[in-house]
Amino acid sequence: MLDYETLKFIWWLLVGALLLGFAIMDGHDMGVGTLLPFAGKNDTERRIMINTVGPHWDGNQVWFITAGGAIFAAWPLVYATAFSGFYWAMLAVLWALFFRPVGFDYRSKIENPTWRKTWDWGLFVGGVVPPLIFGVAFGNLLQGVPFHFDDTLRSYYTGTFWALLNPFALLTGVVSSAMITAHGANYLMIRTEGDVYRRVRTASLVFGTLTLAAFAAAGVWLANGIHGYVITSVIDHNALPNPLDKTVVTQAGAWLNNYSLYPATKLVPAIGFAGGLLAIAAAWFNKPLTAFVSSALGMLGIIGTAGVSLFPFIMPSSSDPRSSLTVWDSVSSHMTLGLMLGATVIFLPLIIVYTSWAYKMMSGKVTEAFIKANDKSAY
Image (cartoon, rainbow, N blue to C red):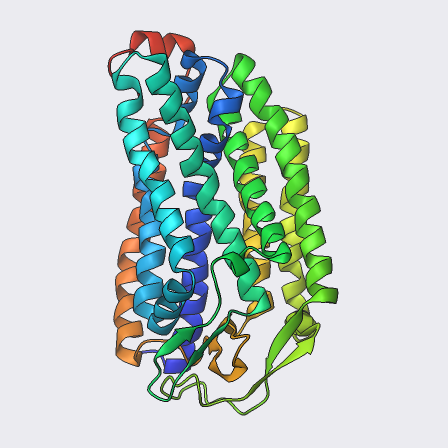
């Protein structure tokens, strides 16, 4: 079995990969939901949009469930502390997500304009709220979350729900929402044609540009207006987890330290900008598949930038910095991480192969003729 330190680092990479898989796969579903009331001007056009993601959205939820399960099993202290501090925010995510399965399944069961329009807005809520809240959460992580542990490692959150909605966190929420919407628009460009295609192409250009502008603004703000965290004591990376067994201080510009210590990490934000620019250029020149792959690459860079900036911190504490949770002191046991890695090596490739097969079998344009021919069975 791999040593404890290596397993801790591997699970930092794996949780990041699962979150990225969730953002790319479930993100384009949410982007479609966000654009639904605006890019679809009548019921047929909206059914076209819904049927581009209808056969896949529940399979893509596997990434969300797996990422949540991995955080629970690999980082139990992070899971418990985050769900205590972000309790109402996480409930808002779950309530918003309820609109998706019900909306997809029941919207087209009744031919009543009010009924269908209501579910269109429900799917909009299910598409726009989760990425906005996840972006806000990352903004708060970068500023530090007001929690601390007592001597028995019980966590106490001392902030409020409304304090989470601060200006920097709202800006990172804009980054996340715009990124997901642009990604959804790029996916719709692959699967649609005609008027819907033209509208989502415009949305791709607008939200792709907004993503890069907000990402750049957040970077400047992070470098000049927000203090980062630094561990000042010696850390035994192979030791059993104890977040209180260290000292931490805050320093101006400390979130940029990793880019100085490990110059290769500068490629991560560069990939975020390059992927975003390529996606905009591909949308401009009507290359939808290239735009979709490029926006996925941009998401890798943007989400990866948050992870690299925070490393080794996962959840810094603003009220008691030594209570901050890091890659080294918030994990499960050596055996648990090893068993989870074995299961991941077996099942993750199966998920990727099955998902790829499903998308290949249900590829192609969704058209008005398809909706009319499958009026009773289509979403």
